[in-house]
Length: 141
Image (cartoon, rainbow, N blue to C red; front, top):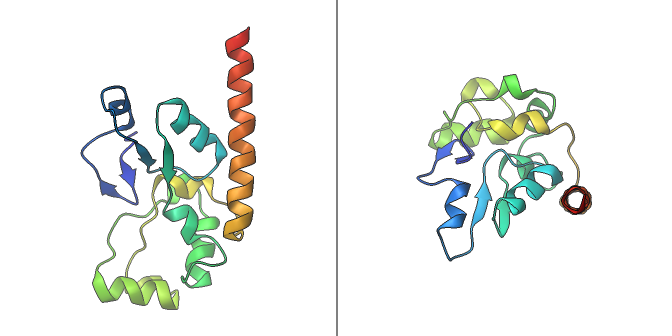
C-alpha cells in the first residue's frame, strides 16, 4: 500500500524518507482519523495533510450527494482519479456522478460521517493522543 497516495496524486517519496531528511515532513494520503495521524507522527512526520476527509465535512463546498457517497462507502469503493476540469467541478457542485468521477481513495474506507471541521479536528486530536499514550505505555513495558 503506497504512502504517497494523496488524493490519488502520486508523489515521488514516501514517509520513510523522514529518516534521511532534516526538513519537516507532512504525511499525506490515506489519512482520515487520529489513528492515522498517530502513525504518521510515530514514523517521523511533523504533521498530516487530508483531502478526502475534509471533503466530507459540513463546511466543504461539495454537493451533499458526493459527501454521502464517500461516507457511505467502504475501502472497496474507492474511486479512481478521473476528475478533469469543468466536468469534475460539475460533479462536485451538482452531485451528479455521471458527469465525472470524484477523487477518493485510501481514506474513503475510514470515513463514515460528515462532521464540522471543528468536530473532526477535536476528535482526531483526542484519538491521536489516545493512540500515542497506548504506544508510550507499550514502550514502558
